[in-house]
Amino acid sequence: MSMRVIFRAIAPALAALALASCATVSSAPVGALKVGEAYEVSLGREWSDISAVMTGKTKKVRLLSIDGPLLNRLYLTDGLLPGDYLIKPAAKEQPTPVIRPDMSASERLEFVTDSVAALEYQRVQLARPRAAKFGETSAVRFDLNAQTKEGLEMRGTGMVAEKNGKIYVVLYLAPAEHYFEAILPEVESLLASARLS
Amino acid sequence: MLRHAASIIALTAAFAVAQPAAAQRAAGLRPDVSSVEGGLWAVMDDAEQDAKTRADLNTDPALNAYVREVMCKVAAAYCSDLRVYVMDRPFMNASMASNGYSEVWSGLLLRATDEAEFAYVLGHEVSHFTENHSIEEHQARKTRANVGMALTVVVAVAGAASAAGATSASEAQSIMDATGNMIDLIYLGQVASLFKFSRAQEAEADLLGQKRAAAAGYDPAAAAQSWRGLVLETKGSDFKRVREGETRTSVFSSHPLSSDRIAALDGQGATLKSGGERGRARHRAAIRPHLAVWLREDLRRRDFGGTLVIIDRLAADGEDLGVLHYYRGEAYRMRRGEGDLARARDAYLASTVQPDAPPAVWRELGDTRRRDADIAGAKVAYQTYLARAPQAEDAWLVQDSLSSLERGK
Image (cartoon, rainbow over all chains, first blue to last red; front, side, top):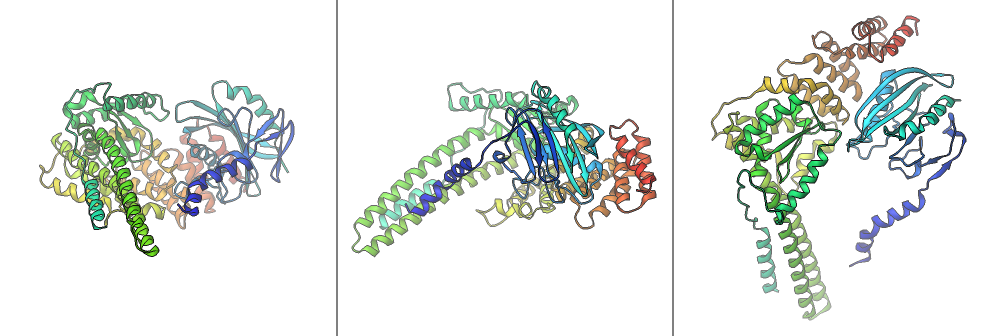
């Protein structure tokens, strides 16, 4: 067996090891958290920044969690421009929603719900869209209901805003049983603290 | 070497021989729990329990009753052996497990033009059950793995022995190269055999399914038509790789898989009693309450070209045009290719004159008009939406858009 054959056989394992050694979970401590260049939120408790270990990570999306991504996850996006996505597609034939240059308010909400559906949640339904403020900028607050494939009820809440052609999203997702309500007060404070510069 | 080569050819030929088909099962039969089939059933029993709690299980009693009724028509004596679950998944698929647990995906119900096409697919799945295809495939896989491994060892040993007897280093190298190539061929033969075996079962289920549907009183021509619909959808895909999918699946043959299946079904169909029930109205009535949700789910696949082909098929008889034109507009709006927004506007307009137009079409028409700088048209569309859906959760959002237009923004 040639070295080339041996290397080809073990290359995936080596790549996985290399990735595991590079990707880290870091602390997002209490206090101001700057997201990209444009906005910041205030964290009332320590979160873990798991952006680096999630598959399909992108530079413009920060992903925080407290108990792990299956139990609570918080997406915070820097200003998304046309062509940007919240969820990176796994393949060209499985595209995920992208920002368009002239999105209406309903399309921005559709972008959120379809992105959650692209995470393979089932029966994703947006509820109670309502007027809100993202700092001084007009925004839309919303709630979300979905289910995992296995039938676990999920709930979500968040906010989407547009400023100077860029879209900003805050999205919190957690199982309806215990976890959603447990962290909701922290998420509400965080949403109220969001500021766009 | 010739003797070795002859042995190899003989073994390869033996490998290529199709496995003997298992006998057709008797209705009502349960396997002994200690048998191989009993083990397969136990695994599938667990999978069936999982299916009952899946989020995408469709629990609409009327739809489930319809699916069950058609399944029993084509299953005949096997009806009581089968349990069918409708899953809201936007892909054309149905499955049958060895224990009689069957799934029908919403994508199949959406794509079947009528009950006869749906019955053919169910007949195909029932045939997998009656012909014991699961146990047959399990046995064949075991045999292929064992024969393949034995053959590889035989070739490797024969090659090594021949190389040891070579009179020069270059001859020994040539023998070893030839041995390596032969081992590669054996591997490829295993892979090809896997494809062929699977195709043989599928082809058998195709023909038996068509016979079952015809015996239940359905038009046998529906079988090939269901495949033609899928071919059209594949050709209409937005993705080059999907459009070329037919030839990719037939990498081990010279022409597309679907063409083979269509030709076989056309051939057998000509020998069966022509005519028969199509059940178009009954099928549409069964799926009508789910059209909007299933089309929205299909749009989330984001292969808008494929969705447009499905909508064209559904609209062919002029039914449900308010809903269908609306979702045609949605496909164009979401795709946003060159000229798509104008196509979306035209589709929305076509929807608005239909009695079943959903209120949301006026919201989308308003947004489209606004993009076109048709302020008066946008205002009228938004006002119509608010009049038709005053309680909608997003009414305030549309009112906000209307107010901004009235303020001249």
